[in-house]
Image (cartoon, rainbow, N blue to C red; front, top):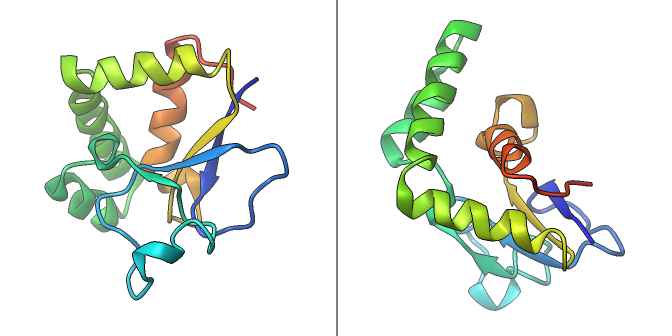
Length: 128
């Protein structure tokens, strides 16, 4: 069993399992009934996405220093009790079931899902 970190909207792996969207907003122009069919997500979990202010900061990041500043702030958001409990749950579930979490960004290196990957690994998640 394991957890995958994916780009939403891309074809699913055969053994990917439930796909969780960790994005602030649903995909534009896509009817809710088609989110899963179009390989976006099966379940929406926006509380694992950056706050709207941090989304804007990440999108405006032009240097590695800007990106590192975003990462530090996002990690602080995710390490609050509320978010930390969800991350702990996902890390534990990764040992018993197949599922994935993702975002729309094409480049994981400049996407909050890279930070989610780190946070989940730190919590002992089994990541494929």
